[in-house]
Length: 149
Image (cartoon, rainbow, N blue to C red; front, side, top):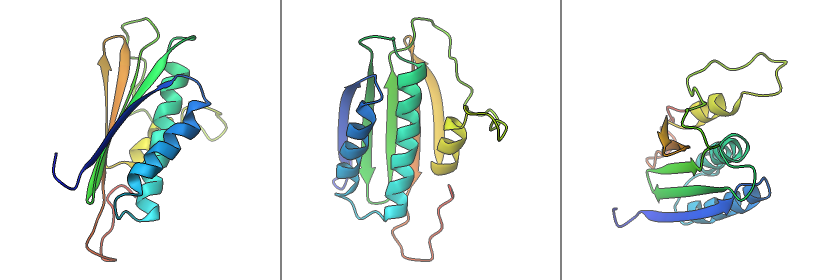
């Protein structure tokens, strides 16, 4: 960890009420670095998608938890969201799948994460799924253009 990095980790109950806490906690960490509102918004929206997926698809129906880890630096961040799994050993997600049809009410989480983050990886950890996202932030002025947008 470099001296300018801020690291935070927490575990929340796997229910949708936890989303507001996660967003607020991450916003407080991001606020300690000189990120633009656009860059902070990218990470917050991607985190919301990842945590929502972990709650809905990757956690036991009762008493499940989701772990969130973030390392934020002036020039970027790494966000890791890990669920406990649904009790099977199968990885149920294809992060490279195409977006759903416009009329489908589901299936947009990973396309959104891939658009917002500079890198998205998914792996099985125990019975659960771990999503790691990396975000680059340009600190050299208006000539910077994020590769994720």
